[in-house]
Image 1: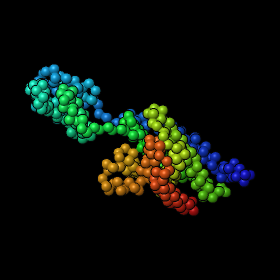
Image 2: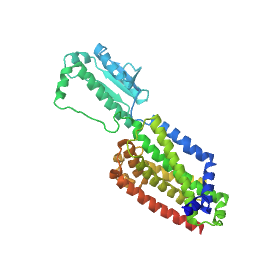
Image 3: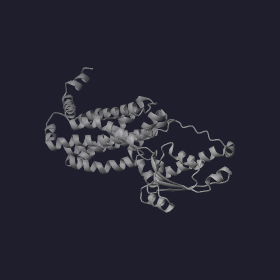
Image 4: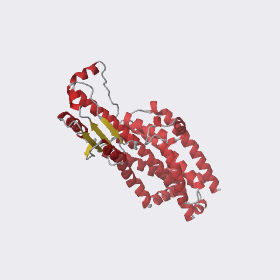
Length: 377
């Protein structure tokens, strides 16, 4: 006990560790990155990124001009998916407005629409959608089909009996409200951890190079392993704080659930933090200054984030990139954090991803430690 206390509070390593903590706390840019960046990024992604489409500009040519046709137009605009905009007096001008980007969709209701609906005969309307934004057009097409189908059933309830033979009782697990932010936020947490972890860890070492204090550290009675460990410990604490702030913002503002074991998340986060610190240290041994490290980190972070499943599902990627994502440690962290937060799963299901993170942490930290000792030699 005495030896441990001496090591922690009275040794040269303890003094070095204290110096690293004080140096990090005096860095105002770092404090800003830890506290305000997660708040800004999570709010921006949580509120701005949504697969829902609303307020599409709809132009209508109603040649039927009947109560039923007006009910159909009202069915389109009552849920604020479509907003009614003025349109030309003929189909050519209407389609021209869609082509020029003045409207997102155009609808033409034929003159015989009411007569066919009352006679219970097939009645059709023509829809034209702007397909430049393929994602929006696909979602709008689904909305259009659902609105017209519901309207047809309301007008002729006897047609609904056809659907009685097959019933679809869908239940959405883990996200009953289909809140889009719950999908994006765990990925944003991983993204923030990677970006801040690599930048902070590389900047910490490169600052020593630029100010010339690295040579002074070599003259102190500490080993290269103690120097590296004194650099890593404050970074682990800082990145845990970054993740804690991100999690607090997600839970308080977006009501992101926490259904799993906090200890599992702590273990997963520890391995992921070690991975990003190892990448940052390796980057610092290659680059000559902080500006160069930021540029190189940009080329590392972008493919890491894109191939992680943070923003887009891995299943939607081409097979080549899906296979390439197996070498991306961020992929496994996002699988774990989504499993812990949203599904409440434990180590019995997450152990393959945790083992992958453990392998990445061991290999990358070994390489970084070797290059760091070689640089000090």
